Image (tube, rainbow, N blue to C red; front, side):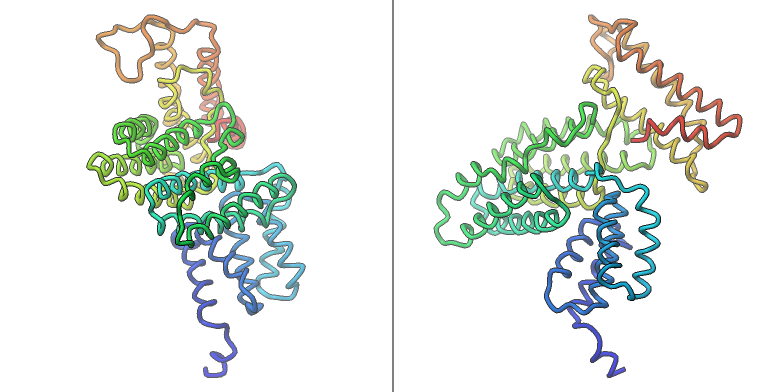
Length: 420
């Protein structure tokens, strides 16, 4: 036992490896595990056994997030540098066999995920600097630099240049924060190209991406936190609730439901503290909620085809409908699913028909609910939104027929375009 301990790795390295494994396997916080493994691999003189396991676990984390390109690169690197290290070389070979046919250079979900998180952190940093919270600003700046260093390992070309430029700006900011003379730091940060790059969301979303609306709401709330505008914070928390309510009320366990529920709960918690004037506490809650969203949901993006065809007030309800359809697809694909896809599809068809009726027929102003459309300006029968709803209902009815015939493979193929 004594010999084994003496030959083993230094305890801090082993503890770091175990902490990363715990976050990955128990908590499912893949981004947190990724950062731990990255930091471990950056240290000098790491024993090969520790280095190989950290590389393998890092590849697994990327795989679980759906970021296949970085995962494939890590498994290839492991096999190149440590070809005889079992069992990890064998596991890496097996993972490559599974991943290589599916990895696609156009897959940038991991990059989008990190960009969103950097934008959240940039807005938190705005608030810390605006209110001279130097300790908080330093903490956030260090977290931003850690994320940038992780990203640059997987990038090239213009993306790499943007990351390097931003990293240099953050290193300069960190040095300024350590100086006793802090005057002018915020002005320099607000004009920084790095800040502009982190807050540039336009290139991250497709026109029909519902996540764009949710992120816009979160951005506005974060800016209201900087300005200590309690009324605007409450308004944006209400917008977040409006997107989440139809999905959460459906009671379905899904990635979409979990994501929107967490957005709703976090914005409500921030609004509550801001209403009481506890803005510093509200900013701390917002920072932690941004971390949680990033680590729990990874590269999650809620893509709803044709969302822009519909009036804005009805879009959250459509997200709820398509969440049910996505759940039906998961039920078909999973042998141990508890949900009945026939029931879910029937409910979705009934819902879109109800939405169609509300779109084309003026409603009584006295009976208008919060999901009603403008009673004076109904939508035309041949409008893109009505045509899309009818096509959805026809597609889902065809899936029901296919399921009734027992053809699960065909049903899955028909529903695949509706996967969120």
